Length: 489
Image 1 (tube, helix red, strand yellow):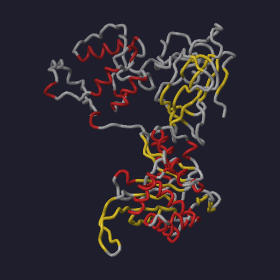
Image 2 (tube, helix red, strand yellow):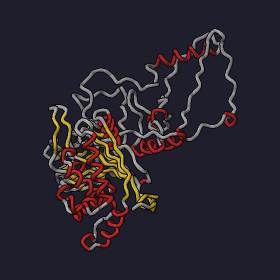
Image 3 (cartoon, rainbow, N blue to C red):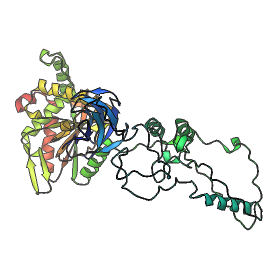
């Protein structure tokens, strides 16, 4: 899709691209440039997080940054303009910026005339031409007569017979930080502070100019409410007429210090949707086997000393991955997918081996393309690159697409086993538990041995119990006798 537009011969706009497969939105994590900075074709200007990964976006032309349309932390739809570039700086025909990207737009006084047509604002375009005046801010008097009415009511409450004279309305400050009908007014750093402290800006009373919420307002909202004994003494209210009831409502102050609310978005949102869809679409079956992997651990130690494996990551996961690939070769029917639309089982003649990786942004599952064709050193190198890229948060959407079978290593957390949920579109997932020294019957005697538990979940629509059992048994047999890697491969 097109990711840039031309507003004139001088200014060009760059739109949020679809950096994945059919993604509809992305969150701007960080801007690497600011208005006035010079950029060149291919220079990374920001980092965004999609539902699959964090991705850096390069600008496709040279120029000077004219405007950033969205602050950090904003979720932007694909196709929206995120940055404007002056490709011919110094020509002297620069239009005024659409809006200050750091501040929220503040409404102009109602007395000012609207410009003709539709006028640019922070995002998109303003309302169409209209002869009506803007509505007053919430909480402000609708007209000077409102002050006279309020004064008359107050005079009645105080026992006065005559109505109070009309007075000019006092400047109003919104009871809560927000424009009429809009979200609270606050600068991006203040929004981030509120998010970190778990504060809902809609509950914060603003003290800044024009009803803008300040950092002090957020800190005040985050502070625990004072105890009743610590509240300052207040004068008793003036007596009122018995004929005019006065309603008093206690103000509920939420205890934000006791809980934190985290928006569900990006990778976490995608994980939740995928897991729910998988759990309630594919009928899961999970089988378990406990196996003596002492010989595998000895093989791992020997491989670490092998000069052909120098410079690559060697660990038990490497041998387990190779064992699963051999088991799939012996039982190719397990490497398949269910096509609901066409009511077909799609058997795949390649293995894109997924490896579940825990990252600061959540669990992701990049995969090693054509893992079935790789030698042990090549597989070790691919595993090392996959893990490093995932931990750095640089895994691309393409690296997570097209997986066929997955391994999840819950043993690194000290967990014995689990019942893993299939990744959508895959037929099987192998969970590997912690490898522990346990008493085990070996050659007729109880001896301490390295033991682990494997769990294989599979889609029962296309993998029956016999096929699933064969795959799991083959993996266990290889880990118990690693020389089968040679005889079965």
